[in-house]
Length: 494
Ligand code: GBH
Figure (cartoon, rainbow, N blue to C red):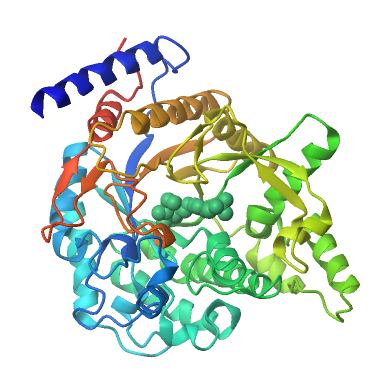
């Protein structure tokens, strides 16, 4: 066993060295560039009904219908970080990371969830302890206010489809600033808005697992974008002057390369971007929904005989209020697809996919991971960063997630090391070409509950044994690799 491990470690060093003789960037990460790791509450905490926490949509869905999840698992215990957060922090400290991006569980903090309801003192204490422990260890807390775990008590009233959730979200976010804003200086309002709405209410891939045929997701979009804008303005006015923190959003940016270099495929790639992340980045950075999106959804709605568009409209005041509501842009990026316009008849009618009209595929030469959606395409990462620079006036970007999936303990995870090397190399290239990227976050610190994939897909730099009641953690080869990158601030040793 030991010799086998030694042999594989040796082999991976050789492979890495071999690779680094090729295209890996020799550059150093700029001064001030920050390295971190990320997790999210439901994916790691467990303690789903402990110390006063109430049920969220993931607790509810996984208990009512375990078949939603590939291995019929749930996050009841997950990595048990509610009890083991000190161990997690020890791992981050040894890794040498500058920050830890966590999320707060709404139902742990405010079990009744609605505006005006009371705080759960044990929940308040948990995040106080976590944040204090991070700071005591020289690790900066980055906090995501909402990472997909909608209170179930709000979901029964429509969740993100019902605009009354905006005021409830604002109430929750205000408590979070009040409680932790003295120590937390980086806030993310929402993690990956697209997944909340599209996978939650359109494709039924994530809780609450609904299929609302091109209608629900746009209502959800409208509420998420307005909630984001409003809370930014509140923070800006009421908290920033004293707390002096910064607030942004986390965008999930799968990059579409045109399938061929035809004009039509280039247009398809642009359209795909607007329908996948332009719908919130355009209102937040440039103002209003992207014109192509308004045009297409309005047109289809009319053809369907509707009197109003399936895409709600912002008022002029809302457009102004939302525009400019970011201090930095969080970018989650994992992979790339190829884009071309598909046959309209091939899409469900109505649907977001038909509105967008783009068919995606993968290049057979790309290296697949065990996750069906995740291929290693570092050039796509570079192109995405250049696209953001050009279209959104070179905003300050923090890569808020990037990582690779495996499906077994895979302690010697050469593939994750290789993926990360190549993506960081693409990142260095983008910085060299003028992109204002100031930080990188690896997803994830530890293996965790990977939503509908349960525990079948692992993203950790650290392995977690989910069969062991102790949830033993074992650092992988990629952990040592990232440790070296952080301490040397470069990818190569020569
Ligand atoms: C992030 O989502 C999440 O923020 C995080 O919680 C999660 O654990 C991590 O990444 C790893 O997945 O099958 O083509 O429809 C990543 C975004 C978006 C992942 C869409 C998978 C399915 C694409 N993802 N998705 S597809």
